[in-house]
Image (tube, rainbow, N blue to C red):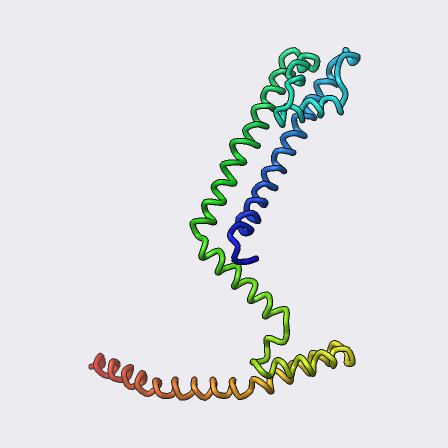
Length: 210
């Protein structure tokens, strides 16, 4: 649906959302590794949680479901544990609430401001893709129906190389009158302008000569 501004906006906003989600996952992995290193550095391994438990607590903090990870962060380290958990909660909420909403709103506002240009651009791209992908567009109307009736059965019989040669020959034959008219028009148009331009140049040079 190239003329639907909603789908155009959703496509652009999903790209921003994917990028921001990747950055958030990268942030989540970094904090999880940092907490695991604190666990490994802690000698009392009987009271420290496992990888799965730490990830579960961080997910709860990420989505604002529970603050157990902040309460249990002293088991990782007395100072660095709470500092890392609070920093992760701040960054997680900032990324997924403030920055995400701001990015999506900005993208949608830009698309709405240039709505007509966006729709025309999408239609142009689809038109060029259709012209390049379908060889029938190389024939003018009326001839394209005959080409469809001839080339479609021929494609099943001959090889791809032979089919390409036949297609090129037919395109040149059908479009030869149009190309000849364009060539004659250009020759007459430029031939009519060339003497006047040459006379003007000679007059200017003669006027400047001593």
